[in-house]
Amino acid sequence: MGACSDDNNSQPTPDPEPGSTSRYVIASTPVGSQQGVADYLLTASDLTQGTISTVGQGIEQDGSYRYYVTHKGKFFSLLYGQGNPGAVTTYTVDDKGALQKTSDFQAETVQVFTTAKDDILTIKVPRSGNESASWFRINADQSKIVGEGQVNIVKLAGNGERAHFTWATQVGDKIYAPYMSIKGVAPDAFGTAYPDSSWIAVFSYPSMAYEKTIKDNRTGFLGSYFNNGLAVDETGDVYAFSPASASNSGTPTSTKPSAFLRIKAGTTEFDKSYFFNVQEKSGGYKIANQTYLGSGKILLYMYGTVNTATGNKKLAIADLSNQTFTWVTGAPNVIASSSASYNNNTVSEDKKSVYVGINTEAGSWVYTIDIASAVAKQGLKVEGGAITAIVKVK
Image (tube, helix red, strand yellow):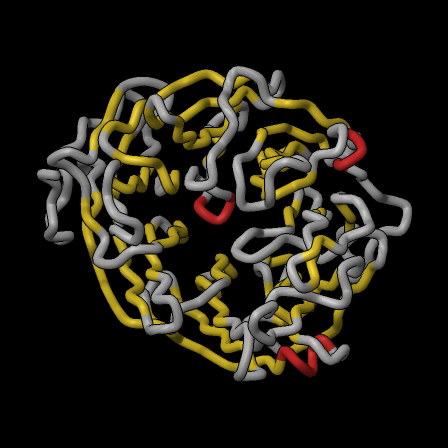
């Protein structure tokens, strides 16, 4: 591939359309590359049409398994070092819409990252051995670590297993961190004897002092490994989904359905009057992950009995308030390497559409899904690579 290998160089990129102020970063892994080869970062001002390519373009990331987040007008690329420290690279977008690297520093490999006030909060969660998870506050303006601490996850679980945080979300002045209960012992580290319970640890912020755990037994653990289980609507209500995917020694053990729970704004308990049984509404499918769209609507990645939570997905749009469920039409099933919720599938400026990267045997495209009708339309084509992320920077 004739792509740039020096990430101090910005890629050729067309000027934004007249009147357009948005800029999107599309991460793409070159087609035909070996597993673990780094993404290339491309930029675009319009995701509904046209073509971009990794061939001779893009900023190569120095290391595989990158994850992305945007905050305070900056684009952050975090390297998952598989246990080793990884780079956190910060970019801004210049007047021509190209990425420019502004900083690069080493940080611990983490499994959780989220925006919180002026920071990016990251959490390193050991699945065995060390009994404490480590958290780090990276100030987005300074692009450096400004605070850190630990949480004893064995003590937090309180059941002989380990609390393994699936994600974290700012809710008011708190951090809500859902967790799985896992055994943490090979060869079944992610197995559990508690498949049908839900937990959210509540921390104050920025001190990250533990306050309480919110519990429920109507569904299973919330979110999953690297998948955000929480969505906060415009009123401050928190919606939490379970994939109902617990197992023990390789055998599925969840007996409760894949569903949404709710925590009303201003409270720190689950609303016992609310239970959105998505598995029933979808005809037996379960939720793998989600992207909140606004006004109570949410994009769901669904998996069925023939697939696992890491296999191919069908897309749907649900209304959390009305508890309605609609399959998306006009788009192929999403394969496992497509853009995921932690890589910020992006809602359009007018809040009427959501952009989703879908890779197929025929190629890779950004699909535009109309939120009201749940109808998808093929848009920007990404040549020479499989889409791994779509992030709106400005």
